[in-house]
Length: 196
Length: 167
Image 1 (tube, rainbow over the protein chains, first blue to last red):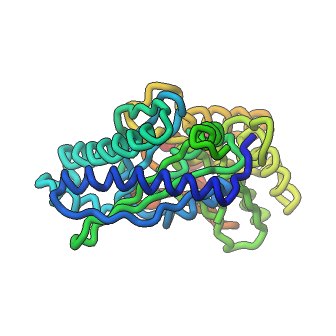
Image 2 (cartoon, each protein chain N blue to C red):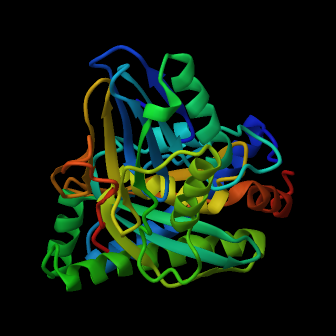
C-alpha cells in the first residue's frame, strides 16, 4: 500500500530530480555541442489516470525510450520526444530522422540521459541503480505512458512520478524525462535521503 | 472519454465513448444495437490487487460493465462484444507482458459472464484508440494508421470477425 507523501518529501524528490536532470543535461549538451536548459522538475503522486493525462494529449504521436532500472529500486526512466523534436535531435546528430539509425540515436540519447540521471542519484543515495538496455517505441503518447506506468506501478494506489523537461537552447527542441520509482521504491529512496 | 481504469455506459444514441491510447490496456465494448445501449471499459490490469480501485482490473471491470449496460436496458442475449488493445508496446521484452495478460484475463472474464467476442484487435505492437458510438459502430485506430471498423461485424452471419494486428 502506498503512502501519501508530504510536501517536504516531494520537494526532496524534486531536488534529487533537479540534480539528476542537471547532470543529464550536461551530458546531452556535450553530445549535441549546444547548451541544454532544464525546467524545474515536478514530483507528484496522483491516480494513474491523472498521471497519464498530465503527460499531454493521449493521441499525440511521439517517440518513447524506456530505460528499465534494475538494482536496489526496480524502476523505470522514460524519455518522450515529440516527433518534430526527435527529428530535430536526429538532425543535430547528423543522422536521418525516422530511419533505423535515427531510432538507434534516440535510444542512445535516452540511454545517456538515463545513465547520468541514475548515476547522480546513486551519488546522492548510495543506491545501486543500473540501467538496462533501452527499449524504443513510436506510438501514441497515452499508450506509451500508460503502458510504462501500469507495468511498473499499476498496483500502487497512487502513481508517483518525477518529471523534468530538457530544452536544447536556440533550437526549440525539447524532451521530457520521467522517473517512476514505484511506491516501494519511493519509500526506499526517501529513506536513503533521510526523509522517510 | 473513458480514462484508464474507468468505465462508462450510455443509452443516448449518438453519444461517443472513447478510450484514447490503449497500449497494454484493453478496451472492452458491450453493445446492444437494438436497444441502443453501449458500454466501454478501459481495463488496465488483469487481476484485482488486494487494495485500491478494483474497476481498473479485468476480473472486476467486465462484470461491472455488464451490469451497467443491463441496467440501461440492454439484453444479455443481444450483447455484442468488441476488444481492442493488449499490445506489447516495447520490442525486446522477454517476460509475458501486462498487455498479453490483460488480453487473456479479459477473455476469461467475458467467458465467465457467458459473453462471446464478436470482433477484436488484440495484441500486436502498436497503441490504439477505440470509439464506441451508442446505437452505431465500434471503431479503432492504430498509432499512425487509419480508422478501422469492428462492429457491426461485416459479412452475413460472421460468427467472429478477427482483426489480426500487425506486430
